[in-house]
Amino acid sequence: SRPLTVKSIPGLPTTPPLHKVNTSDTHMSEDSFLPLHGGFRDHFVLTPEAKYCCETCRLVLCQARQTECGHRFCQSCINDILSHPNPVCPADMEPLFKDKIFRDVCCHREIMALKVYCRSEANGCQEQMSLQQIPDHLNVCPFFEVPCPLGKCKERMMRKEIPDHLSWKCKHRESSCEFCMTKMPLTDLQKHKETVCPAFPVSCPNHCSFSSLPRSELSSHQNDCPKAQVSCQFHRYGCTFKGLNQDMRQHESTLAAEHLRMMANRNSSLENKVIIATRLRNIHIFAASLENQLKRHDEMLSVHEIRLADMDLRFQVLETASYNGTLIWKIRDYKRRKQEAVGAKTLSLYSQPFYTGYFGYKMCARVYLNGDGMGKGTHLSLFFVVMRGEYDALLPWPFKQKVTLMLMDQGPSRKHLGDAFKPDPNSSSFRRPAAEMNIASGCPLFVSQTVLETGSYIKDDTIFIKVTVDTSDLPDP
Image (tube, rainbow, N blue to C red; front, side, top):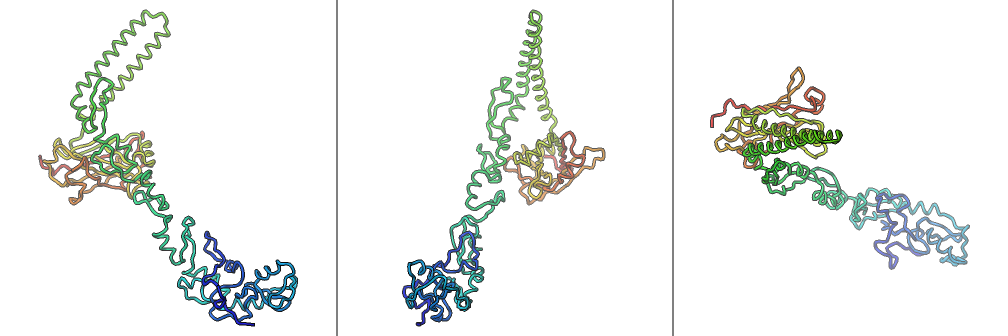
């Protein structure tokens, strides 16, 4: 016999192929560390004795088998020999018979107790262990190469590099959209922001003072955008004015008499048609036809009355604007508006403006029926907004008046819910407005939705909000 070691075999690769690990599983079983063919190619701490080496491959025996003539072979090596016709032992040319070859359990036990270096030695691991301890060690070895645990990435890395890989290298790692906080793979993040993120800031297509607003509010903003091109609502009566949203209120106020004249003319025309219809009724042969005509004219008169009522309401709003620092805001259709807020269709509502005096501060209220910030999904959030007014140049700044916010109880107990605050003079919310309105300031946790919807604060699907601004110490302009 002659002493052989793994290192002394000519042509043996320095990093031999081991049993392949499934890229979807970083765990190594007790059998998966065995070579695919031939003997063990590990780096042994001490040179193995020749009795532990295979007569064919000259490597350390893997699943040792002993022949009738006393020679030892790896299981895969002896199977190769037995696959040939009339097999003979390569050591002494004695004939071999499959039923006379047996497992050498004692030799196998001794081989599995031999000390080896870790198979990740080239990566820096300096651990030593018995051959049979290799699977347990490789399942925890920080230098052992494993696939990315996410399964989508094709990269392999040392086990100790997994945290860094998952934190900032893997392009499939989980990340959060910084605008809406939704979690998703990094590869989907950019497309999410560019197409569907409801909180992603977008600019108004009309280039108004709102240079940036969440994508989910763009649709509702278009209805109120001061730079949007709109037609006068009296165009059906003959008004041809078209202009910016911000100019429409001035137009309606200036031409109110003309609009009423147009409506009166239309009314006169309808009355003439009714008179003609009445005369036709007296000479019409068929009573059924006459009744149908009268019905149609009655419907036209009803539409006319509705339009007159709508106009009357608009004039009432103009005539009843509050100039004493108090706003009573009536919000109808609470359930529908709440659902629109939950579905992110219309997140917030603005009240009509109110004033501290005819030449005073211009203000409004803003409400989130499904909450905002810390109150999102659990509370009604209520805020106070300072708006740009006609007489701001004559008023003291910053705005310092005490503000009281209140949800009105419509029941007999009148247990109104309120909160009050004094403006922070250093906050940009209370400086002289440079745009249409300042940033809102108020109470994200104004009232919980449970209290709001189980008490007597909602009646006939309507709630009332009261905002009071202390005007007692305001100087005359």
